[in-house]
Length: 310
Image 1 (cartoon, rainbow, N blue to C red):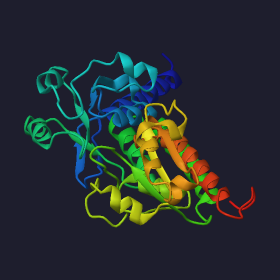
Image 2: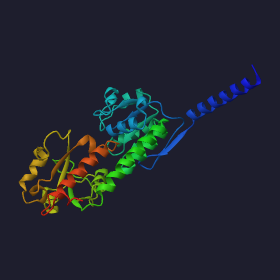
Image 3: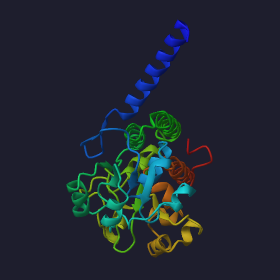
Image 4: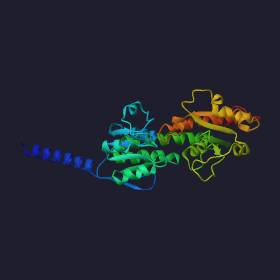
């Protein structure tokens, strides 16, 4: 072997060793609960305990590393084939442990705290995902990319998401405010306060959440309180929003109060729940739908015309 070949071979070996060391290097991020998550090396076996967490992992480039998910984890299509480890509220801890995960992505307020504490006690690293603001979705993408060793696709997904949100904000946030009641659940009647990410979507679209100041994240409210607030629009989510909005039972029930502004102007809107309730990249699609709905509400004001929404 010539001296030049020997040098080239040594250089190639050094590069390979450096790459191998980088792959084994520890990674560390701060999760949505403000806790630091440190792994001795990028995760290779990941379990996600909420549908939105599954979507985040795939979008961050870690789909091949997922080995378990909870019920209703159906996007992207590949997620449907993942082994199930229970529901987001009732986890099969034995099944999770048997999958030998080196990272579990959890839903901070959606999973059972007692069960999460048991996983933590077993030494399994947990990343708590619960975006409260729109940009938190991008932050989660980047963090999960770091933990899974997929930073390049994660950064690209975060940049794409931020660009779409910025475009919607530039188009809609400055338009005349529309007061909104968001119906999270019909019986008992529940809504969302200003700390929940859907409230941030409402703000993005130039709307104002009429119950933003309530203290619980998901407060129970009375029908009388909604009627008194007299929102200009009532919004809810549905399974695909396949029915015309006003025919959705929970929305149609509001027609019992015909003098309420939202009812009088037919501003009763339903959005595909998968696009509005899951804090993942598809939230941009739900936000776009809501922005269009609120713009339609603006055109229905007395004296408004097609240009009045702008």
